[in-house]
Amino acid sequence: MEFGTKEISMIVEQVLKNLEENNLISTKKTSNSGLYSDKGDYGVFERVEDAIDAAYEAQKIYLDNFKIKDRQRLIAAIRKVSIENAETLARMIVEESKMGRVEDKVKKHLAVIENTPGPECLTTDAITGDGGLMIEEYAPFGLIGAITPVTNPTETIINNTISMISGGNGIVFNVHPSAKKVCAYCLQFINKTIIENGGPANLITMVKEPTMETCNIITQSPKVRLMVGTGGMGMVNSLLRSGKKTIGAGAGNPPVIVDETADIKKAAKDIYYGASFDNNLLCLAEKEVFVLEEVANDFIYNMVDEGAFLLNGAQLEAITNLVLKYENGKYDINKKWVGQDAGKMLEAIGITGKSDTRLLICDVPYDNPFVLLEQLMPVLPIVRCKNLNQAIDYAMIAESGNRHTASMFSKNVDNMTRFARKIETTIFVKNGCTLEGVGIGGEGYTTMTIAGPTGEGITCAKSFTRRRRCMLADGGLRII
Image (cartoon, rainbow, N blue to C red; front, side):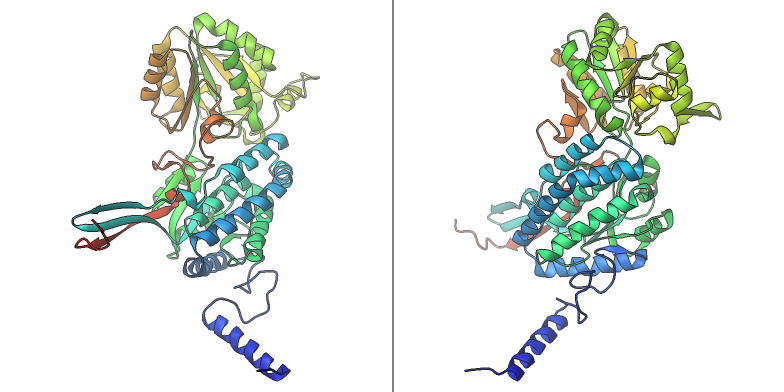
């Protein structure tokens, strides 16, 4: 049977009508917003309410029309385009936020792109017996509200996106205002990639001008089923008070202990690398070192040999006055210096010719403000301790119950076990830099959302799902 032009036009018109009725496409022409929507700019919206609505509708389409193999295909495409943009993102972050180092941010991006698990971690549990067959599977929450930090802005977007859409969810982001441009760029190329690979537009969205008010609107929306916050404890505590299920990744002030049995040269090398990485912006980075007195001089010598600049008394006082503030009887961080180069700090106190310096170190008592504050700067305090008990006690004080990350360099298994049991951190690294605890140079997968306060730990797709049980009774489907 042959069709004329008129008949073909009628058939096409009817197909389009059927697709529209099934919510698979919009009646309007595909614009820069992509398929399934006529609002927003590849996921970036002027109004937060529109960002919520668009992601909510996209998630329903995603759940109804896309299988696990489709999720895997979309995530593979997201990984590919993110690798292509890793260096661009790193440069844009430094330019916009004025924090960190481009070369280290590239490494962080590659880690989350390559090492964040996809749907493969959503394994089904099954139990059979005389009573029948029971299976438990991981189902999506629906729409997730995600708050991201300025310290790891697009790294967190990519990490959260892979994990959350692997679980079948949609996401509305409230990004940090100091990284909103680079976050918009990242979110848009991810959305374009999803659309180009047959997925729904606006599966991930954000508001163009994020504020505390937009965050509150996301938190209070009945369409948002789960809140995820990566950043400071103030933000996490606010989300926990919202009444919604919350996954919170809060602050850390990771201590390191170096005992008398440690390989001192290796300890210095690894700690120097971890503490100076991206100017110490990672919450899991080494923030202070407690070293036993008998090896302290050797350790400091090796730190200097690695490239660290040892501050004398006058220089430490000048750096303290520069990068910390003293108000109402206590020290706090001068945010102007968060994530800045160590060489820039030295230049500010009159020490020139050291622009390539990556880390400042200082020999201080346990109650020095650099020990007690999570400063997110390349300034590493070193505390001499009489014995292991004292080192553990000081480390506990500095860690402040965050239970985030800690590490130890030792050849004594009993010593490492004792510290690990006392400190109770989500991540505990032995004889390596703490970066290895999230798969950067070590084993295991990577995340930027380390949920210590709410207990999920190193998050992955499984963390952002609900366990659902299906029971087929009376021995059904069993062949024995």
